[in-house]
Amino acid sequence: MKKGNIVLIKYPFTDLTSTKVRPAIVVSSNGFTNRGQDAIFVCISSRTINTQPSDLVFSVSDPEFPNSGLKKSSLIKVGKIICLSKLLTSRLLGEVGPNTMAKIREKLIDILDLN
Image (tube, rainbow, N blue to C red):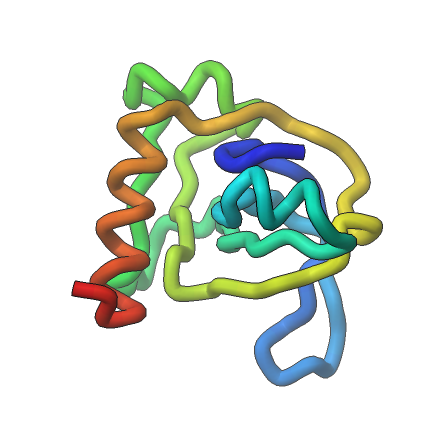
């Protein structure tokens, strides 16, 4: 597992009432991910309505979309950041490319006020 991978993972709801298997992107560094049992992920949703400022639209027309393993345009929910055990991943779907990772990085810098 490496930064930029899209994986299926058992992702908890924010109120911790339940979980759902959904795609997520590994955003932690390869060093962090490979050192321990955990990785840091951002959620992906196929529901593209009700977007938030922290969301990133990942469209089927994006040149990096074909390598993602996703079936339709999605929202990368950059504001839904979570550190979970890598054991909760069920499979690798694909990956996002460098341009998409750069957009995610910019959103993370803004969300976390890392300027």
